[in-house]
Amino acid sequence: LYDRDGWLWLDGEWLPWREATTHLLTHSLHYGMGCFEGVRAYAGASGTQLFRVAEHTRRLLDSAHILDIPLAFDAEALIEAQRQCLIRNGLQDAYLKPTVFLGAEGLGLRAKGLTTHVMVAAWDLGAYISPEAAAIGLRAITSSWARHHVNVSACRAKTNGNYVNSIMALNSAVKAGFDETLMLDTEGYVAEASAANVFLLRDGVLHTPQTTSCLQGITRDSVIRLARDVMGVEVVERRITRDEVYTADEAFVTGTAAEILPLRELDGRHIGALVGAPSPSHPIDESSFTARLQALYRRVTRGELGDGLEGYAEWLTPVKA
Ligand code: PMP
View 1: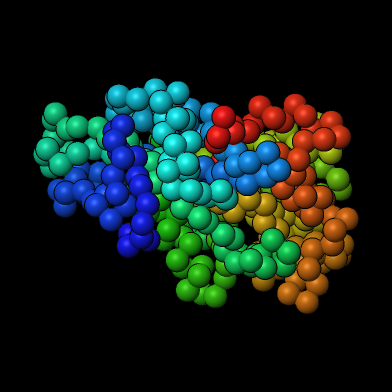
View 2: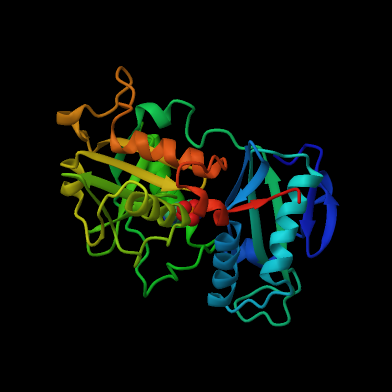
């Protein structure tokens, strides 16, 4: 990723991609004290547009506030940096990673006078796990690592340090031959996947965990609103147990990078086997709720907003005015 042409934004300046390095004593590298976002831009009929960049930027500012890291840039400046990052790099379908970190003026937990930095990088990002995953779904295993407890870590904040736990959980699952992991909270209820929220459909009602220990996903919010307001489906936010996922009619995970990916197997149980769940030999049925939601999400992210979807224009920010 580091050896390529392009530009990165750092504290209001543009750096050539290969020169965008930082000192080895950078405080955030040592303790994970920093926060970031993952944002997508989509090319559509009316040009490239950032998807829900205002909500992502607000979550970045919230994360920094939770960590008590003051920033020199407001939401407007950070959104403009993200737009410019796409323009400068000639990107259309892209993934952006605005990141807040502390400088190298001192180490140790008591370091004072550290500078605070914000950077924005953007690059092309294809399918999150594999090009086929959206059609054939994911095989997951429940992790023995719990998702953070609210008294252990700030679950509302997308902090760098929070991801050690997610990566360990994911790596164990991948080493064991699975695509994804399901993380439970410390009381044993379903929290989320390694970097995506979880939903299940049973008897036409959509269920998802409350945002206590899981991240308050922006795709999660988009899905709840599209399901309720466009697809007319009841959505319940509540505590969910892993055996409810086994017995769901459909299950899927949501995230900016992941978008909407079916979960076809958890702990060796084929989810929704009775209603024709996806598998490598049987791609997702177009009439399933998950497939219809995927198609709707695709239309909304790409700005195809006819037929009553006009109101969702507020989720899209044109990159070129
Ligand atoms: N949970 C975690 C831990 C994540 O890293 C992500 C990805 N940001 C999500 C959920 C999904 O959030 P969003 O839809 O806002 O990308």
